[in-house]
Amino acid sequence: MKKFIIYILLVASSIGYAQELNLPVWTQYLADNDFVISPTYAGIGDNLKVRLNGLTQWVGIKNAPDNQALYADFRIAKQSGVGLTLYNDRNGNTRQKGAKLSFAHHIILDYTSKQYLSFGLSYNINAFRIDIENFQPTEEIPIVNVGDDRAISNNNFDVGLLYRLNRYYFSLNANNVLNKSVDDFVGVEPRNLLNFQAYTGYVFNSKGNNNVEFEPSLFFQYFSSDQRSATDINFKYRKFNRSGDYYWVGASYRFLNDQYLKPLNLGPMAGIMKNKYYFAYSYQMTINDLSGYNSGTHSITIGIDFLQGISDCPCTKGTSYRKYKNNGTNQ
Image (cartoon, rainbow, N blue to C red; front, top):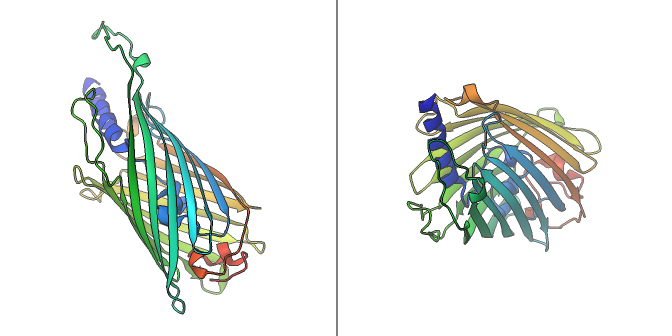
C-alpha cells in the first residue's frame, strides 16, 4: 500500500507539471468543439458557439484532477473569427485559473477543390496557486510551517495552422511558445512548457444516405521538455434528421507512443444537438496500475449555438456537410 501511495504522488506531481499552463486534453474536443485544440477553428460555423465542459479525472481517488472550462467562438468578419476560453483547474493542492483570447483568419487556397488555410493565435494568461490553507499537520509531519501565499501568474502564446481539403482536415499547434517565468518557492520547476499538438481526420458520408456521417480522427500531443508524447485514435458516427438536428456516438483509444499496445484510456462517448442546444458525455476507462482504485474519467459538455449569420466565404464552413448545410451555403 505504501508503494502505491508513493506511485500516486509521483503520478499526481508529474500531471501537475504537465497541466500547468496546459489545459488537460481528454475528449472535450470530440464534443463537436475543435476550438478546444486550436485557435484556428475560431469563426468556423457561422454562429456564436458556446460550450461549457466539466471534467473529473480518476473518480474515486481523493483530490484527483478536476477541470471546468468555458469555450466560445464566433465569426467577426467575412473570413475571421475570435474566441475566448475560461478555465478553472484543480489538481490536489494546486489550483490554476486562466483565460485564452484567440484570433483566426481563414483564406481560400483553391475554390474548386475546396482547399482552405487558417491561421490562429491565442494570448494566454494563467494564475497558478498552491492551497497552503489545506496543509494540515500529520503524525509524520507534526509541524507545517508555511506562512505566505504561494501563487504566480504567467503570460504566454499559442500559434496554430489548419489545412482543409474538402472533408479532410489537419491542424498543427505550438502551445506556450515562451519559456515560463520560474518562481523560487517551488525549487525544481520546469521553464519549458512548449508542447505541440496535431489533429487530423476525415468526414465520410454513408453511401446512399447523406444523413449519416463517419469521422475517424487522430490527435497527437508532444511535450518538448521531456519528450513525452501520446496519441488518441477516435471514431464517430453522426446521424442527422430533416431539420438538421443530429446525434452522434463514438469511442476513443489513448496510449503513450512508446507503449502503443498498452492503452492509458479507452472509452465511449455520445452527444446530441437539438434546436441549437447541445449535450455530450464521454467516459474514459483507466487501463493501468490505477484502474483498481478509480472508476475512470468523466466529461460532460453542454452548449448552445445562436446569433447565426451566413458568410458568403466557403472558408468559414466546416468539414461536416450536414452540420452547415442549413446555414445557407452547401460545402
